[in-house]
Length: 141
Image (tube, rainbow, N blue to C red; front, top):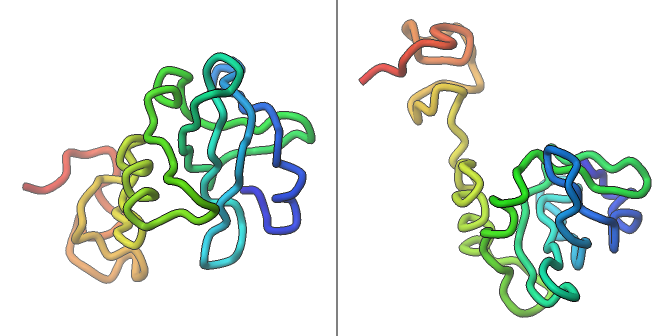
């Protein structure tokens, strides 16, 4: 996680994919509304950084020079572009999250992808209804 106090350090950092390949440079950091930590970055890619893509960075790490994200270079290169301006719309954020296989903002699902999982009260529902039971099994139909 890139905390609010570290956001300025990430600006212009080189973005590395999950295999350590260079993807581009951070063009802009978009903080989360919840705590101000970095939620997305736009990454300038392509020849001379002429194309920008939007990448979620909730799980990214920064080593002081490079921003390491958990996605393949091919997935990053094909990500949606951010809109114009210095703000990120919910639609733009959700499009990027969907591209990377993440749940839309505010629609968290558990490890089994079951929208009925009770993520806040583990162990209180029927078997398979929370993250503590049925892990690694096929979700209920």
